[in-house]
Length: 592
Image 1 (spheres, helix red, strand yellow):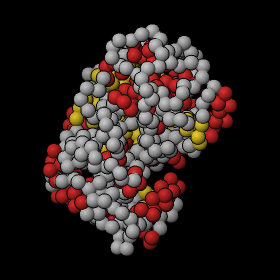
Image 2 (tube, rainbow, N blue to C red):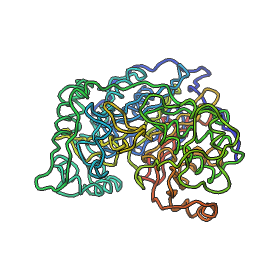
Image 3 (tube, rainbow, N blue to C red):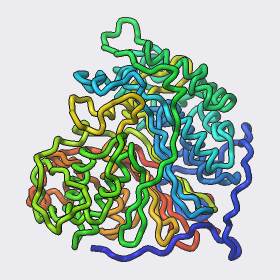
Image 4 (cartoon, rainbow, N blue to C red):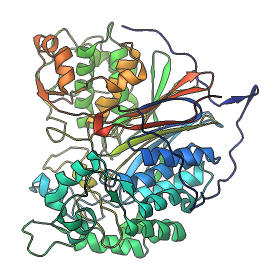
């Protein structure tokens, strides 16, 4: 087990021996006629003054522009997220939601903002019962009340220095001028073409001439550019009860189905009153200590912080940590996630993240893989040294057998030492497949994250105004109170295992951060088989099979982004080298 520690990071950039903790000045909107700086797409960048990692060069470049004009990390993160709504429209957008974990250098504290979508007030625990999953995805019924815009406004008001209108300007420019279609955009469009063609508005936008845009062509979205302009002018009230909200509700309740389509498209339950009632929320972060480092994550309704945190606590209780132990700790934490975590009162979060509970759970990890499924534990505060497994078998807690790279994640840090880790999503790749006519954006299908039931006692059953349980796990790690590492990933419930495996790779297996992200992955979510990439099977398959593990191939798991503080003000931004077409890492300056 690797136990070496990292060089201490900086909480703020040092210039001439003094610490810059004053807030940055307000940033003027970028000149519309000023060309973007030419930068290349690379998965690793090192330097000073701020760093960015996203899945997309245009989004990373947007964040870089904001930082270089004096904006802070939150300004840059929101601007980048809006740009991802243009260039990654199948993963992000203003009709989606997400979670922000934010380190505030001035206060030396971590904050989180919950922008998760909510169920309409008319939704009940039985609303999804008996509906085939794929039919639920492509429907008005799956669309949750959007949270992104409310989250953007709250984040900028609390921690930013620019207005929403200013933050949207780079995205407006990209949407107007267009971006180059790459293989990933083409592949995602082609994979969704069968359902996109069943909606007139979606086909008109994403299937010009009846086919996906060709690789190398320029894709423009003038409708989204105009939507962003009006959103900047009128603010969130235009969506939450205003004209844009009315258009969203009309689309949800009367999807624009292509004449002659045989698809069974169910209408949704959303009303304008649901939009008026929506609020983005600040919540206390989750926090655990791992080998003296403080790991912060997102609390419920996300299960990311609790499940990553519990698994790390379990691993810390073990004498040695390797890939077998990583898989077993993940198996146990997912068993507990399924039984206890959701948008419900009384989630036993403190006990789930307690050392006593982790030690009790760690006692179940032996030399061989546990029998499937692992039962949930009892986070009741009364823990024995090494109990026998208790309780009946729990149902599997993972979702579909194989989850793709839906959702996206970005990391930004600035010259003052502020850090943002931000997961943003519209759920499945392509959301519910329905573009709001004339507005240039897809609706989400977040409500399919609820348990369909019947499942008495399940904390993740749908309900009026309820937020579906999420797996998003934006994570910030502090060492001695200062930022050390920030990371996250897309990938449905594999987000949790991707974040956990990167941390295990970095802290236990001696990998550098670029190596930790590039390494082949496996995801165990209390399922009979562990899904794994081919490289993982090649490296570890024989050894782990001999220890009782069973595997199924998953070609690609996650698409992570991260930033590490290397000490003396130096930053390392890291994105995927190849997954999802490879990501984009940038720094403000390669040298002091």
